[in-house]
Amino acid sequence: MDTALAVMDAELDWLLALNPLGTDALWQEFDASRRRHVSPLRYADPVVDLTALRRRLLDLPVDEIESPLLAGVLAEKQRELDRTIELVRLRGTDGFIGASIDLFGGVEAGLLALARQILADVGSGDPLPADTGVDAVVAAVEEEVDWYRTQAPDFELEVVVNADVGSLMMVSHGKLYLDLHLRLPDARLQPLVQHEVGTHVVTYYNGSRQPLRQMAVGLAHYDPLQEGLGVLAEYLAGYLPGERLRILAARVVAADMAIHRNGIPEIFACLHDEHGFSTDDAFDVAVRAQRGGGLTKDAVYLRGLRDLLDDLRNGGDFESLFAGKFALSHRVVIEQLLEAGWATPPALLPRYTRAPGFPAALERCRRLGVAGLYHAHPEPLPVQDSAP
Image (cartoon, rainbow, N blue to C red):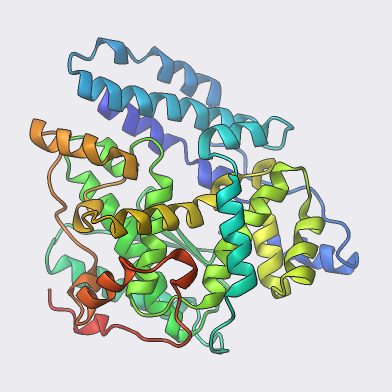
């Protein structure tokens, strides 16, 4: 059952299925219309037969698993995959938003209030030139992979450079996708590498070495913790600017507006005119919120960061969170899986955990609230000096 579910999860690359095509041309059209009109988003055709995949999924006899612990974990994943298939099937229809809320949740009042507080209170950091392009990012990622190979010779990472990624960089099924035209400040290079490689790729690697394969593809509802850890990695690597925290808050506001059937022009106007975001950032957040017809996943970044900081403040262990991909609510389940031999401690930890100053930075995070988790100026940890 575990292997079959992992195979089906790999077949259903829902993130790429919901990635809009031609966003540069979309912006040009939107700007030419005086920012009042945008054409419907376009997507690549799904590469899998969703009906056949769902049939295979529901035919799995998960209820025959003898271990109640494993039956519970795998049945939960089976239900989540079923909802994910439905999400992709409903792409571009009126039913998509409901499917997204069912899978990722909506925007609860407390999270929306936190987002609005950040937008009101958190200012911008140092204005830094976007002087680093995709070649420098690829070089930094290759250097990062080489470092991990000193500890784990089988550590691998495929890097895909594409003009239609829909994000500066993202990891999907263990591959790192980079936008061909990405530009970012040099001070943000290492924090973003630590987000993508140090969180998403390291947990994928650790999970793939577990007896239970779901730890690599992700137990049900793993996204908030993954994204919370990724954003925290940016802070621990030394530069999470106020703008980044504001972007996470803007994504929550945009998701809420998408739930209430506001389109890209309305979301853009709210972020650009009311909250002062640049045209690029406001349009990017608006398009992301409208993926598929209203994707609420972007709200998990701020929710995951908030919940992770609450967990750390209450004494939660940090290193064990890298054993694979799972939800904070699975802490007890992971302990039970360890006792039963279905899970092991993480084989690798992020590179930044070896950097001088990391313990003090982590302790600071245990005391900070979300609205205070940002840097006014870059304070980079010397990640390159991290001993293997």
